[in-house]
Length: 137
Image (cartoon, rainbow, N blue to C red; front, side, top):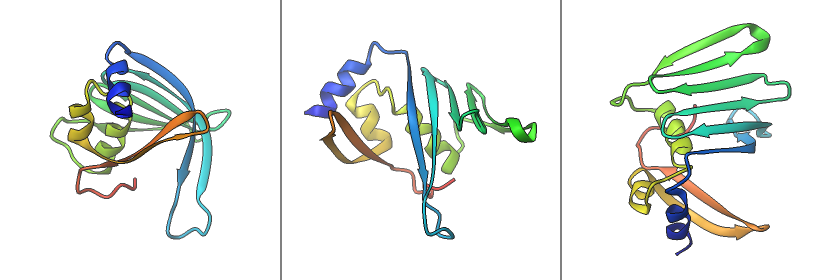
């Protein structure tokens, strides 16, 4: 299966980076909020996520905390990350960690695979966290 081959190909990868489009749908807005950015991943527990050009929001994941940096506001928010914590932040971080699953069992233990289909020369995979927490931040 396609996802099995993808998971097998990930075992030797330790870093990756990509351009991204973040789309957030909020009940209070008629149109979704769309932002472009870039993400850098260093497995197993570090990433940098930037939105906007120049960056308006930067998220830095370190082994024991998440930092949200707002350069224009000259503000930083710190969120401790404990292995036993649950909720939307944990689910959001799990999505990034799923980017390089070590096995299909690892992927399936944290997510439901809603779909995996070729789309414009790439494969689009839609995942849903298995956690009962809401998926919105």
